[in-house]
Image 1 (cartoon, rainbow, N blue to C red):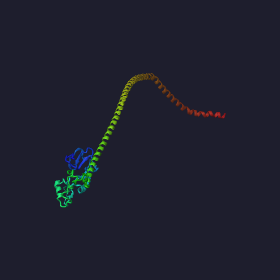
Image 2 (spheres, helix red, strand yellow; image 1 turned 45 degrees about the horizontal axis):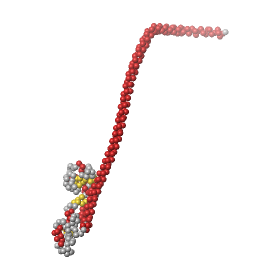
Image 3 (cartoon, rainbow, N blue to C red; image 1 turned 90 degrees about the vertical axis):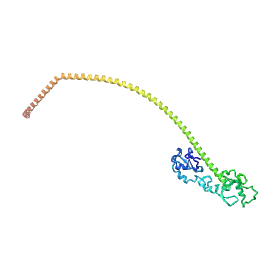
Image 4 (cartoon, rainbow, N blue to C red; image 1 turned 90 degrees about the horizontal axis):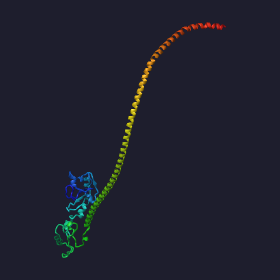
Length: 331
């Protein structure tokens, strides 16, 4: 698949979990400007996810995982163009790689396995002639019923040449293991697609639920708006009634103010008249008060004279009293 940043085909692709946009490991390591959906802060899935790795990260620890992950896809060092998980590389080199070392049929010569297969390396007819020319062949030269022939899948380098047997008999242990692994990889990819579809379906269901909740909230908000409008009408009516009461109160206060001003004027008039009457009474009683003051002075002088008279009479009375008491005693 092509990288979303450099547009080059690559097998070590990190994929975003939601949009499934991809970015290759070199771009993720070196590039300074990445696609908006492939930034480190977004959740990305390990390139080994197609082989069963479930690592997902949205931080910068992807480098450590990539160095330690056994499911990361790698190419065969023998340039066979196969892509296998890192943990199966040794098994692939020993049993699966079409270029692994092997013995040439009917010979002790060690060559690459695909060189020993018709359709790989030399021409199949020359290869057949080479095999039949070997001295250690174990059958007659005229019997070619077991001569290696090109397999229908030889262009994909999947199986060895046939021996004039049905195709099901051509599949040995190695080829069956390879096909099983191929089916397993395809099954893992399909499982990943199914999980993605399920996740998208769950997201769609959640979106529908959120839309329904949003519609319910909008209906509740509309009801609240109706209640608020009703309250506004009630408040306006109460405000109008309050303005009417305020107007009536102002009119009553104005009338009371006028009445108070009239009462105050009457009271001031009465007070002025009473004050005038007091002044007149004071002028009328002034001669009498003068006479009363003179009489008081006269009485005071008479009291003084009386007191002085009493002082003079008291010694004389004390002397005459014993003389009057003696005859009474004798009698």
